[in-house]
Image 1 (cartoon, helix red, strand yellow):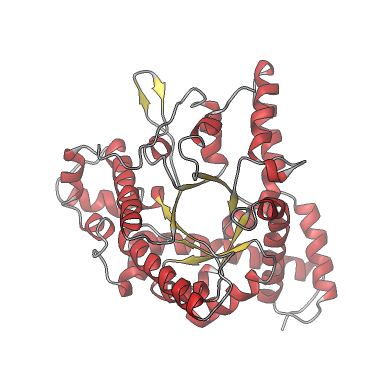
Image 2: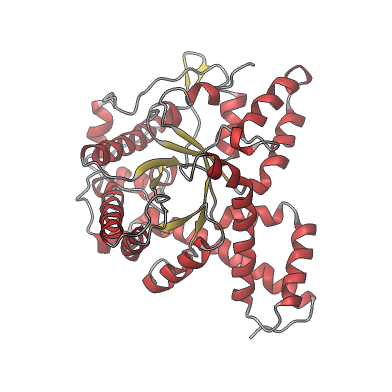
Length: 400
C-alpha cells in the first residue's frame, strides 16, 4: 500500500478526524473524475488511495470519520444527478398533494440528508455512535428564529440516529446549541469565524450537556464540534479595506498566518477550560510554494487533535500537489511571526475576531463574515426551493 498525504496526516494524533465535506452522494462521481484525470501510470495507485477515503463496499473501514453538508452542497448533490432527482421530486409532489413549495423543499432537503446518513450509518454502528455522523444544517434563512430552528432541528435529528445538527453561530444560535445539547442532540456549529462566537457556543454546549445530565437525558450519543470557517474569515473584503485605510498591506501569508493563529487560540481556549466541544477546521485554502515544494499551511499548521472537514477542493491539491508532504503536530506551536500579529492588531475586524471578548453575543449577526456566509447559504436554500417551484410548474401543481 502506497500511503497518501491523507494517510500520513491522520497519524499525527490518534484522535484526529477527517470528515468528507459534501454529500456522500457525490463521492463516487468525484472519485471517478479524479481517476479519469490522472496519468495512466498513476491511475491504479490513486484509485486505491481514494477508495480508502470512503470504502464504498465496507464503509466502516473508511478513512473518514464523519461528514458535513450545507445548503450549497445539498443543492450540488441534487444538480449532480438531475434525472434521478427530477423523477424523485415529481413522485414526491404527486404523493404529497397540496403542500407549499417550502414544504416540498423541506421534504427534498431531508431526503438528501437521509440518503447521506444511510451511507455513513455503518461507521456510526461500528464505533457505537462515536463517529459516523452526518451534519444536517438548519435553514440559514432562520438564523434569527430561535424556536423555528429548534423545531427544525428536532425534525432533522429524527431522520436517522447518526444525524448531527448544524447550528449557526448567530446570536440566537447560541441558545439553540444549549437547548439541543440539553436534549442529547449532537451539534456542529457553523457560520462561525471568530473567538467570541467559538467561546459562546462552547459554553452553551457545556451548559446544555450539564443540564441534560442533571435531567437524566441519555447523553451517550451526544457530541459537539465547532466549525471555524478559516478562509471565510481571512478572505472577507473588509479585512483588506480596513487594512488599506490604515496604510497596511496584507500578503497572502499574512492572511493564512491569521487563520492559523485564530484557530490555534480557539483550540487552546477550549482545551484549557475542559470544554466538551471539539474544534473543526473548514474552508481551508492550499499553498504556498516554499523552496520549490508545494505546501498546505491551512492543514499542516493546525495538525493535532482536531477535526478536518475536507471537500473536493481541499482533497484535490492534497493528492495532486502535496502527495509528498509529511505532517507533525503543530496545533500547539507558537510560531506566528510577530510582524503579522502587529499588523493584524491594528485592524478592527481582527480585534473582534481573535479575542474571546472581542464581540458581545448580540453583535454576532452583524459580523461581516457572518453576514456574507449566511447570505450565500440562504441563496442556496432558495435555489433548492426554486427547483421545487420549477417541478411544480412542470407538473401543473399549485401549492398552498
